[in-house]
Image: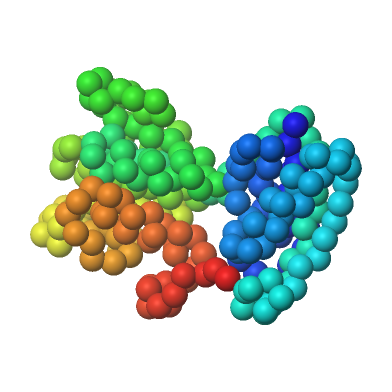
Length: 245
């Protein structure tokens, strides 16, 4: 048995948006409503409900000094018992091309976020849970949903170029990021222009900030850029602060 904790309403500044859920059992917590002490109190209430068999409860929290937080807003939480824990519904779709070191780190981050990930590679030796092995990953561009966030990180520059070209020709994407150097970016843009394409929407090198060369650092930077783009946050503001309590 789990207690589902739903953010039913927010006023002013809050750690997460209305509709966010987490699930609490006697020994586990799945998901997060954020907010440090807010979440700590929510888990405590949920476990009290489990031990007392209460079925429904609603509580409003002021995110101020009494809770040890300084957001300044308020959050109404709704608690109810459920047989199984759920999962946050996907809020955006990422199409990831490449299951190398960086691609794998990107996937590890995205699996913790409320997104749907479609992940391709052409190399059978890189098969792992979540990766779809396709002989021609570029063909999969046509199967992607509208407004997807595309991350191109394959082992092959010609394949990268083919994927990027197909995404640009579709035109109905939210983001198109390509791993690589400034030199690679310049060469790709020149080749794309020669094919009659406007490559201004291509983000290369991908990444919100200049990271090191470790795959995890590159992955964090790339995912941060997707989240900033999704939230329509200008790059300068995204680097100034992280939303939270």
